[in-house]
Image 1 (cartoon, protein in one colour):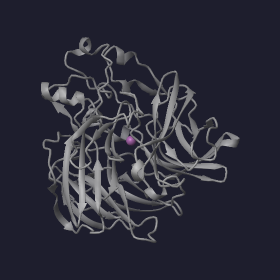
Image 2 (tube, helix red, strand yellow; image 1 turned 180 degrees about the vertical axis):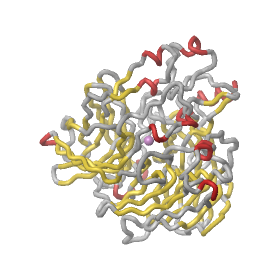
Image 3 (cartoon, protein in one colour; image 1 turned 30 degrees about the horizontal axis):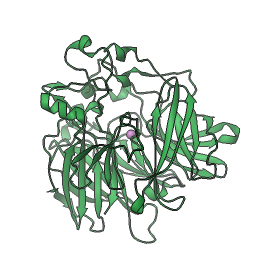
Image 4 (tube, helix red, strand yellow; image 1 turned 180 degrees about the horizontal axis):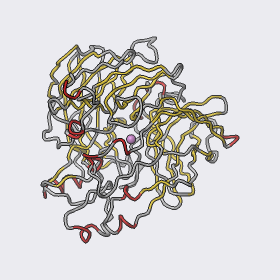
Length: 497
Ligand code: CO
C-alpha cells in the first residue's frame, strides 16, 4: 500500500488528484540560481551520495502573455543538484540557444514550436515558416568535459558542467554537422567491450529513413572521442525517440506512423502534430549490429513488431539467439490537436503506457510479447550498471490508480522475477517526474542497492520538492524544498563526482 507524503484534503478524499493541482505546475521558471542550498524538511541526506543530478525540461512556457500550445515547446532549463557531504545545492540556467536569446530580447515568440505553438499574426505569419526552433529541452548528459543539452531534431548545446554557462552548439569535435539531428536518448554501455561507451543515434527521416549510429568513448582521457559510426537506411517514415542496446545490437522500434507535412507548411499545425498512426501499418524492430560486437559490419535485420506506439524503452539484453527488449507501449499515438488546451487534457481520453517485454527471434522474423504490468507508467529506468544486460529490477513513474490513465503521482519499483511491486506515492496533491537511479558505490552491492531521486510538484505550496528514496524498499530518506518552482519536466541523469 502506497503511503503519501502530502496530506490529503479531507473534502476530496476520494479523488486521486485534481486537474487544478496538476496543471498548477505549468509556470515559468523565474530565477537562475548559483549554488543555492536546498532546505531539508524531513529525514537526512545520505552522506555516501556524492555527485550531481542534472535535469532538463521546459522552463519558459509563456512570453508577453502568450502561452505555448504544448509544454514540450517550452525552452530548456537545466537544473544541477550537487550532492556534497550531506548537503544539496542547486544551480540552474536556461540553455542560451540562439532562438532563446532572440525571444528574450523581443519578449515574444518569434518561432513556431514543433508541438503547435504559433507566432503572432495568424496563418499568414506562420505559413511556410519551416524554421525549427532548437529548444534544447529534452535531456541533459555529460560526455567528457561537456554537459550536453539534447533535443532530438537538431544539434546538442554544450554547457559548462559546473556553472551551466552555455558554450554554444556542439559538433562533438566535428562529428556532427551544424543542425544535424542528434537523439535525446543516448545509452550508456557500462563496459560490455572493456571501457565505458556512449551509444547514440540521429535520424534523417522521409519516405526512406537513415539512422546514423555513433559510439563515443566515455572513460578516461579519450572520453568524447568517436569510436564508431555507421549509417543504415530503411523504407518508410521513422519516428524514433529512443532505442535500446545490448553488447551486440542497437535496437529500434519503428512505429507504424505517417507524417503529412501540409498542415505544418500551411501554418495550421506544428510539425509533431502532423504525425498520425497507421492502424494498418506494420511496425518493425530495426536491429543494427554494433561495430564493437560479434556481428560488426553485417547488414541490419528487420523483424515484425507488435502494434502500438513506443516512446521509451526500459532495457534490452541477449539470451542465446534471442533479443529481449522491455518497453512502454501505448495503444495508439497520443496526438495533440490544434484546439486542445494542455491544462485541460482529459486523461481518460488518452491511451496509457504499459510495460511490456518482447522476445525477438531474428532468425524466424518472429516476436513474442507479454505484458509485465498494466499500470499506467512512464520514465522507467534500470540500474545503469545493467544497461544492455539481463536486469531484474526497474523503477518508474506511475499513475496513482492500478488501472486507467492518470497523471504520474507515484514511483514504483518493479521486480520482473515474480512481477512484484512496491510504490511510493505523492498523491493526491503531489506529481512525480522521471526517477533517476543512483547506484551504490559499495563493493558487492546488489542490483537494487542505491537511491532514487525524483522531483515532485508539490501543489500545496506551488513548489518543487526533491525526494530521495532508498531504491531497495522505496523508504523515504529525505524531502527537500527546491528554491525555484520547476514545471513538469523531461529527462535527467546522474554524474558521480
Ligand atoms: Co524521452
